[in-house]
Image (tube, rainbow over all chains, first blue to last red; front, side, top):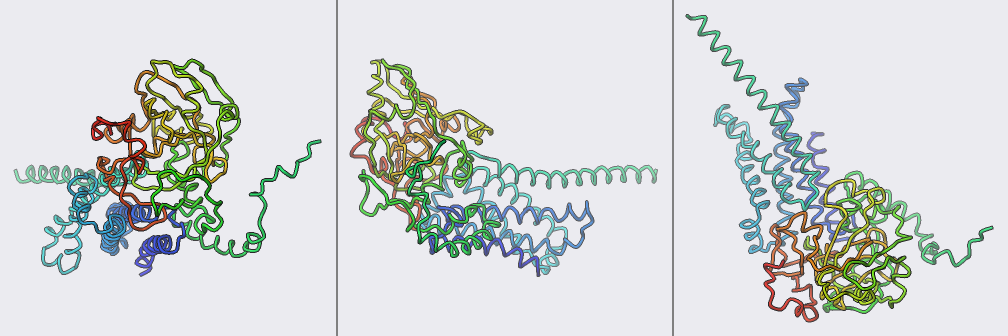
Length: 207
Length: 319
């Protein structure tokens, strides 16, 4: 519960500041609240994605098994922030000019990449219920939810392509994602060699 | 013994009675802003978050090319929302990081293909020209815009005084390079020092201004103190800041953003709603302080004055 409330805080702060800046003439987000608010919500999307992807390594490395319960929550928050980010873009930034939205999508690589990430998240959200795991079966459900790795890549690439010149912030996110993926690849290779060794051992045993 | 004359205290430094009385309100507001600052990177200035235009200095100057509903952008926005990578890449960075910058004494060199090359103390550089206040439209390449009351001298004055030689066709401008005073230069975000350029006929155009102030005041450091270029029909980044060198040449000079991303930022960089930035449309702009977007105008609304400079040119190719 506390986690859910805490996860709502950035959204409340961001939307509150944007609303106050646009309607009340304050400058919490500086002089261009729509752009800054859009970026703010986008960065929080990436943070929640990081949190989601960090659960498994943290469990393995530090034994924080209690995190497992919260992985879905983090994932759903990542999607919620993504929706707020997208709505800010579509409603406030492009102001629902459909021609512009379509042109952006056809012409601008960073928009394509970002939208790609959004689309890939939809099946993850739709199959986030316990029921879906049962229906799909653990193995198939896991396979579907490996899409989250692609979402992470697309999210970082989107951020990277969107900045004008100073790539420091996207670079920070990129390194975190690389670390999270590297751990998984290392784990996966370790498992593979262990399995191969086991097979070899068993074969020798039956000879 | 040095006695400070009363005149040394600028009237702007004296706390007015209303401000004095409002101090308490301000402090409680600052408390709220401070709380927000914990969560919001750009609310770092407690006072800025709640600034109202009522405290702004009045805009002074003759309007140039303004449309009916163009109103000067508040002082607070003009002086806190800046692209000046020499002091950091966030919009709020320059106002924060340029506080300690000493913009005087300052020397400006005029050199290259001129009859009278010279290095001037800023005061001597400005003295021969009449200072003018002009209100211009300002369009950033990032698709936001402002209306800014500049104070300065026509660039043409300076160039004429140096007497360009017949071979001179371009003007190259260079920003100060001093990573100690301009901490942003300690990171290789752009190739330092920042350079910009104009064709000589563009530079001689009466709208091209060397600005030394805004809102009738001395140019704040974050806006490019002590002297910067303003070319209102071009994207804002052409307006090179903190200029130390003006060199006339017979070759198109390299320019900072063109070096950084040649496919995105051309030498000309004239405001043009028809020619998109590769990553975003330039057809519309957000005027700072407004919600609905405005259409962007060809040459930022100065087509009548400057279009002839580019007659016969393919503006798509020469972006």
